[in-house]
Image (cartoon, rainbow, N blue to C red):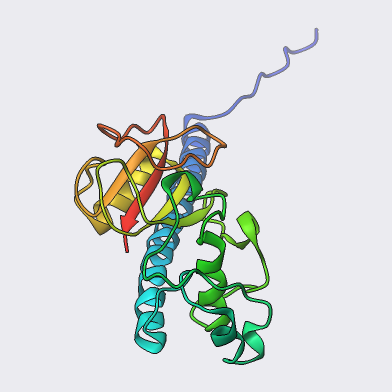
Length: 216
């Protein structure tokens, strides 16, 4: 008679080792995603602070606002980096409406062209219109306006298409974490759309996307 074949399987120790390995892999993936998201938030806050610093440096050097600076002959006389860079209307204010924040309209593209020609921001000063606006870490745009979230006053720098969790982090790092008060405020946006600043959101939700604006 043939002896029955022995059935073999995993021992409890082997199963435990496999589960530990799976747990470590999942933990590493989740931690990696968290690090990537934190890096994006850090880059975004650095972009906001970088634009603020660039504007102050420009004002200190030229005594005029980037984007509004002019006339054209004054810009061209500064050197080859300014060749073909359009002038603003030189009236002492930044003429960019909330609706033009992410279109490059008004003096929006000139704002970034002037800062780049002056060497305060990286990028090509010959780019015009919406192409002159930098991209933010979430694939949206970085724009400026003389009017931000409804009810606020003064110049702002805004980021579009910011996920809710990241918007909360940006607001908390630079302000108070509340989207309808302080120097950082946010408008509820639409995923994949560069939503212009408008009514302030009542609160942040991780399910939504926002346009986040900070005063310059």
